[in-house]
Length: 122
Image (cartoon, rainbow, N blue to C red; front, side, top):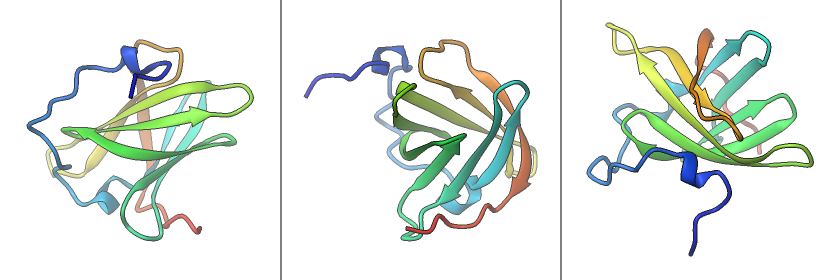
């Protein structure tokens, strides 16, 4: 199976890091990025994956490596991949995040606004 549009912009995957360092629920938070708005990361109701919502776009986030997750975005305006990396603070909790949005190459710095976003209802 070949790579999809936008996948070539992602960093090489570190295969020796097959699992996230934290429980998925630990990554559930709200983030804000001036100009772009709010990004919400929730734990899916089944607890098996993260879900990202940005404006009207939803994307399931799959584990990529270290503290990074990848999601496919596909709607009538935006197509490609989002690459979200969580940054931990000294207390080992999510402090900020960096996002590479479809069409972008430079990580955008996100500021955490809330913790423990509610599970996504399916």
